[in-house]
Image (cartoon, rainbow, N blue to C red; front, side):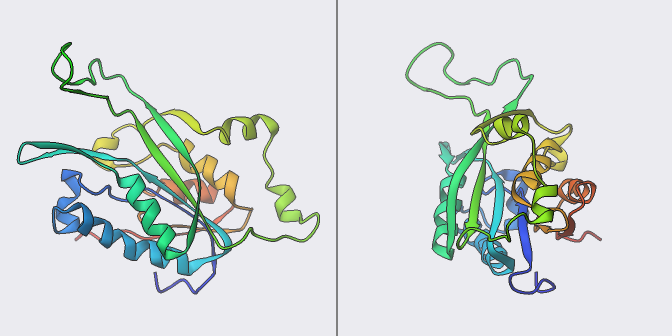
Length: 225
């Protein structure tokens, strides 16, 4: 993201390709948990560079379940991302657990009603939250800050650790996340006219919401021919 100078972004909201998900294998170039996360680490380093002191990064990341050569495993993408970002210099904050509302009639994995060879169904993802450096500083009664405030009702819902929100329509094909996710995060962690960045902007949900909320936006993604 060389177009953005050091310390110019105020907030990053993104949902990257999840390692160990088959549909992303081609883009990562190798089926390896460690290798795929090392590819993402380059992006997290760049995110750290462009954020201001006190800037926030929010990463929607789900763990992955996959069988390779008959060996079923849960790959802890969230934990790996947190540890990598901490080494880069980010301060990990309390994450949000996004409980996706699903209409699937049967999400159970395993051997019917017989223990012990069965698995817990996966219906939650994480929104990892990181801060760069110390808390962001403001002048007393900063007008932009006052004009960007939220209500008590919004605060009570948004700052609870579990969000119950349906997934976006067609998300399996587009990998889009629902508008409510970036809407809440942008309101929670940025001010009017702040610069919001999404290094994996995909269908552009974050940018659309940022524009409606009077934030500046820069998004990156793979170009297609």
